[in-house]
Length: 155
Image (tube, rainbow, N blue to C red):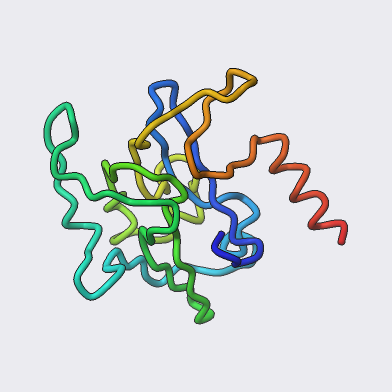
């Protein structure tokens, strides 16, 4: 992600194309016995992801994000800091507010209650293999991801 080695993120895509963003099992935050001390959704002085107010079928009022838009900043007890990017271009539908009061839920249950955000991708297209793709996003399948992690660990 943005040239940060091994800071992998996981995008879970539902059949209705909505994407759930969370950290991948190989993320350094999950590898050591760290505790999360803070999850900050104030990504710039003028932009707070918690102020995202969405209404209606067309998700009016949603903040637009692109692949490199930060969703939050995470601080661990050892002083390490991570910026979680959206990785998907689209409308920010929801931010997981549970992370404010219980930030360690991200470590305990990253694939379920510990998700970071929900995004409605801008447009889904089909490639020559009739697979869903998101324009401008270079994502790995589960098999490709596992292969890449195995190669990384063998080095």
